[in-house]
Length: 415
Image 1 (cartoon, rainbow, N blue to C red):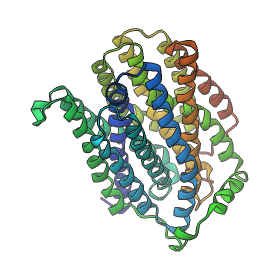
Image 2 (tube, helix red, strand yellow; image 1 turned 30 degrees about the vertical axis):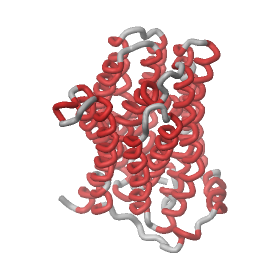
Image 3 (spheres, rainbow, N blue to C red; image 1 turned 90 degrees about the vertical axis):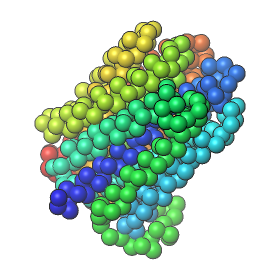
Image 4 (cartoon, helix red, strand yellow; image 1 turned 120 degrees about the vertical axis):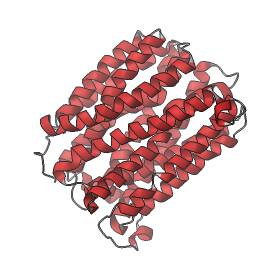
């Protein structure tokens, strides 16, 4: 295996590793354990609001930190070290959830928020490494490979974690509660294990090591000033801000929504497993679709599917409906994410990848401040969780309309 091919697979394996957090913790177990164990006795709308607040606080922290981290790593050439530090922070906080006692929802929320910050900041720097491992004409395919491996790797550990909770004795565990704690620790270990190939095989352009320490808030402001001089990237970010809000909101709040409708948690966990394994081939397929029709067209197709998903979700009332939605989400979720990443990578100026991807991730997570709060607010005022989900549809509409203003560079080119 040559160096470039090894670097591509090593880069993509980080997605395999960190997706365990996105699947087992963020989308799977944490919303359930938070509602039933750490918020025991609280009303469903109250626990939903607390979960939304934890997501919002984490997103606000990422909004500040991601551009600073990106700019510093662009100048210092230390993106791999930044991935290690942020991933280790997220993994340690995830393992710490195993120590939180019942009813201690505030401690659980803070640890979850810290894990989210580590996860999102590591993704900001990891995404930027795409321009170091892939040629411009490879970006759609390589980006999709990362998401595809993420679905597969995260899905495999999630299946093991679900089995641990359902049949704890098989794993030498006493009960489901102990299995849940072991699941959080397993995610932390899995995450760090598959960070190693990136550190070993990925090479990046050198920078000024001293810049790691001397970058300040002035550089953060300069990033946004320079971004205004890249109108295509700026237009894309505005569109992305809206539509990725809807994508992230569905990822983070789907399980909580199902619980609010009275669905069994085992059905919800099985639906997440379905999403992961449908998402693996679908993400690869979207990569080929992006190469054939263009990344922007692929994103439009995904956004149209999400509009149908939110409409169907409003009328959902059974586990069968949730399974159908899981399949639909799996078909388009990774495609929208991977093609957005590769499209943006072709729109940004050379040598500024981590810095500009800091803004990319910042806006994505800042949007996720609004999405969960929108569901919580609409649900609390109306008393109907269905209306909260339906309100997400407007984010896909607005994002799609704004995306029509973005002109995609021809395949094989980069700005």
